Image (cartoon, rainbow, N blue to C red):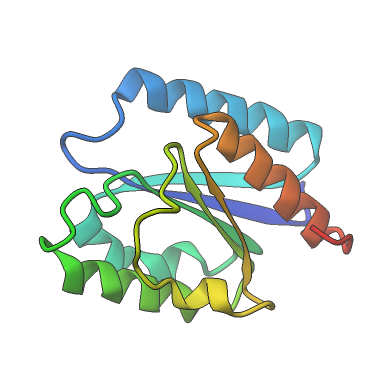
Length: 148
């Protein structure tokens, strides 16, 4: 059994990433974590249900990868819910990497957990599906005591 575990938490709307693409991402991430001897849990949740699920999902997790491809697409719609999600994530106290398949660096929204060096392990943006592998490798190094 793996001693460390990463949670990949994917926020998905009805118009989000097609399920076939999600299956490919899940398979690639699972193969990589097996090679790195790191456990992996993947949960795809809607934005609304995530507020209730986050505390339970991170209970036995050592690091977190957050992916929200709806980020800033509807900047006025659901902003309060999104802020609540980020506050809940910040409360976990575990290393977090946020992954976006497209480049979001020109979009402005605060991520409180990224401001903390203990928690905010990084941001991956614009690498497409390869961003998940980059995040997993960085967190695996961090969990094994090496600089990310």
